[in-house]
Length: 432
Ligand SMILES: [Fe+2]
Image (cartoon, rainbow, N blue to C red; front, side, top):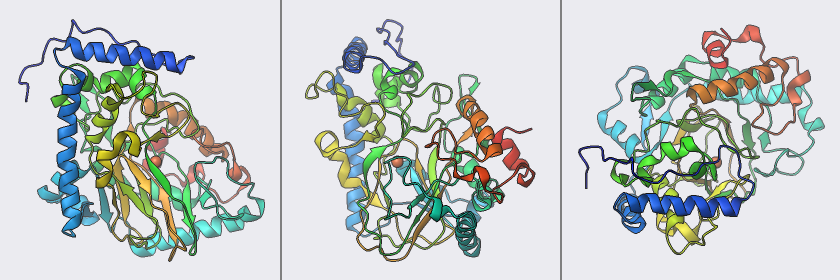
């Protein structure tokens, strides 16, 4: 069913909202679930009916992806950087990016450049005796291998900053941001042509690694997704009887609101999460997987409202823990989980910010697994707010405030300095 005119929703019950973490989580969950159900009912549809619409949409996609995998067809769209640079991305490839919500950009950087950056990171940490001084993981989100970390809590190396402020990165980010609706109702929700250079870490996973991987999860938030006023507005179509209009590419109300604090939080709005490969990686060596269905977010948001979920339970989602996607509650989505194809040094990998993802386990990994995490985080009120703390961290060599306060680089003389920034870097950090 498609509605051609906007329904009048003024009579629907208003949702209670908490713009900071509620003190009594079970009580808040009960209250918000009851009101969400009442709101959907007042729109003239049942929760079951609304959920069935999303479930049908998502199950069709799951079937399509499973069939493609069985035929041996690629599931992850692949786009050549040269086509992005020349504005010649084929329409069919663009359609696939929208359909799948993820992609590989081939040849984003020349291979030699990526390999030089990888070596540059080794030189950077070794010149600062990082391995001798390493104090162990600052959080337990990623594991470590022996006394040597797999995730380097390093943010300001020349390699990272060169990649973040490069023209090639800016072009791809603008292309990715352009897949979203950034303006609606006379409001510009974000600037697709300006990125905020979100500083993140490096992963260097050596050959021979055994890793349990990371289970299926989401990154955009936890209970705040149902409980803050801005997120309630962003997901409004799921809750006001207009589920057919839910568009995972619409940034309306997504770029200014708060987020509940937590050790795995990301303060910024990202259109896509991403990383750039610093070595070749085979598809069966513990790589990233996604459920490449952007609309699955609607399923995850509505699933807790069904009658089989306890009243004070949001299908296991709670604050200060990553949003779990589980067999218990989300089984029908999981057959679509699909890993990356083989990746070459210099390729980059991107996935929609609401997308379910995991990292496969690996035993005795063949070759390295080295990436720089660089997302697309366009300039918007939320990202401008965070950029203030990023500037302070950059100028002093501290760890950015979204990450453990390890601050290894404070005394490292060869970290990136203000004079090393180009105009893209200055704009991204909000230094005019
Ligand atoms: Fe994640």
